[in-house]
Image 1: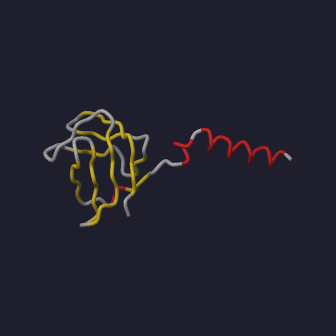
Image 2: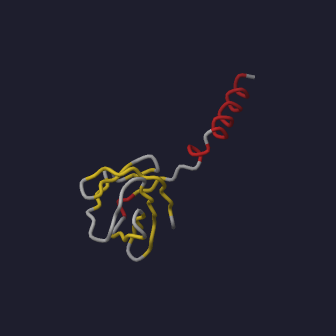
Image 3: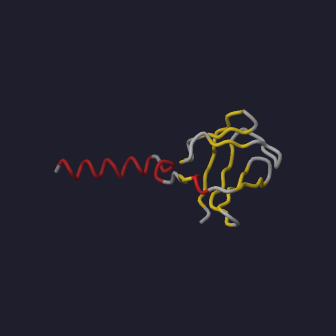
Length: 96
């Protein structure tokens, strides 16, 4: 009986907070390059293939920006550095 309640409670939490269930993460150790799309989107590549797209919340980025990841395994709720300024990641989408 207790196990069933625990399972139902777990599913309820996932339904009430869908952002937790849909959080994307990516291992950026394979990244070889990046490009800018628009003013707040960065596409990261492994070789010639895109593998992740990051949309930034309050930062502007261009092709001459200095982008630095704060860690190698990055998720939606993390941040990265653009020109020395910490920028929150609004969404991270894995493209491969």
